[in-house]
Image (cartoon, rainbow, N blue to C red):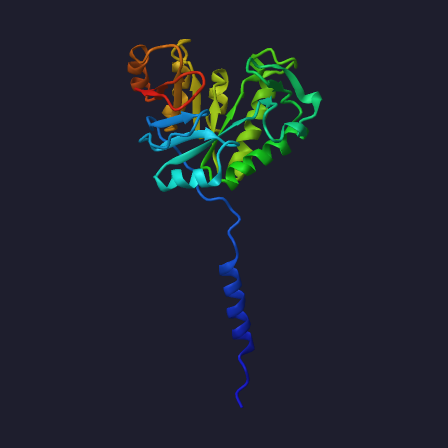
Length: 259
């Protein structure tokens, strides 16, 4: 009678177990290149017919099914979140203690956050970015990332902002998501290495688009929007700077004019 080859059997089982174990490490992040066309829609019924490779949509308002449909159409999808301001209409609004809520940021129902209080904000923002990952988004657009330049009600410094912005970037990267730097032009030289792309509003109106050159020089897209300046006044410069530029209305519905 032949003896069973127990060592061989055990080895095969061990190898099988190893090959079936889930890979818990995030894969390579998406890296949009300069000049990549996009659509930014944060209000109204989502129009998925715009023929562009990138959509930037509200992370709370849209489902995993919507993200999957956009992926099926060959699009990458960015998850819009507010990381520097509290919004009373979000489902997690009650989890933010009053002590971290500052002055209004100019939008109804929104207040600046005390970004120094990372022990409070980090788990809340991690949960939001978890939501983006779980819905299948490719990237995060964290908004209100320049509180230190505004009247927030807190004595925020440039160092506070750098620390917080890098925290948000790390939270996204740890989950395999790309992340964009929203506005915060003055800190681009310090932060371009921490972010995968930039999102800017109104750099042409205020003569600031040149400040975004470090991103395009690094091979990273700059997704740019104007609201009050006609395309004839900014598209030539946008093309020269390799920006991905749109004219939109302030409500950020489906309407757009691209350069």
